[in-house]
Image (cartoon, rainbow, N blue to C red):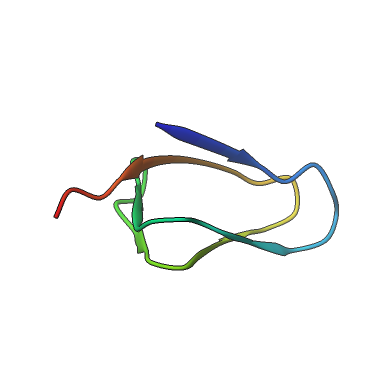
Length: 48
């Protein structure tokens, strides 16, 4: 499991080494995860 936090007022995009899925929203990300201001994502590696 991976936890990403954005501790700023700016939106960011964080590259990920492999496909992941947000465990709260079920959204899948292949290359990068967008984070809004003060956002947090709980991610799990995708199983192929």
